Image (cartoon, rainbow, N blue to C red; front, side, top):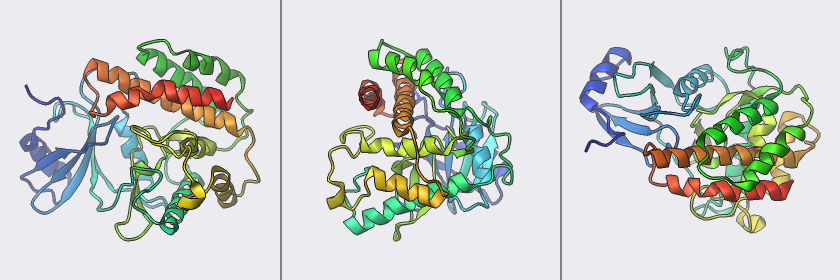
Length: 338
């Protein structure tokens, strides 16, 4: 039986030769182990390498796997202070490989999968967390109109809209009743802080394993995985990254809960938030636990979508079951915070 995610390299090479300058086959492709939502491949030719991101094949949840949005935001940020890979071509013809895809440059760097950074020294960990903080602030400082993203999403009422969206996504992917998720669905809409007018690009999945670091320096060379990006609120990305302070270590979405941060050289949650505020010119952030609870709920809904795809047979990673098992864990952490 043919692998659902296998590419027709000959057909793909013929297509890319017509759309990407200097592209010459023959082509080899290999699917990365990551790319949990949108399958991701390394494409190699005799002279150059590329990365391909595609929608999963088969029936998908409404509005999910928006690789065309990834391509748009990568293109818009090409000349900004946000490090991104160069977007080369978007293909919306499902006949080429079976689903929409785009191709970007392949960058040589490190992806750090564990937030505790077990292979790093305390000094290196401090530098890495400072760099993640810096890149996040640079992203949120981007003038959305100046880079052509004024129509990338609605402005204002971000959290209200996101709660509605992810409630719908969760219900569409629900495979069993989870009391804590039901409680969050009831609590979040009635405890959303008043809109403060802050607007920024929101990456949507800002975490350590969605960025590539230089091979020799603790410097981000590319922020990856833009599928969930939109025009949003800066606190959403910040809280989403800070969830890790409340999440346990172990398989699937490892966190920092219980780790000796001082010994590791990793800033505390309070220190990380304060550094970000200083970079952005904010005094403080009120209702912080709401933003954390919202982020945990949202991630739980994403994990539920992965679990649904696993049961449907379209999940792109063997680790899909680990993500599905995190739904109850994440919901419980959120309930404990509120």
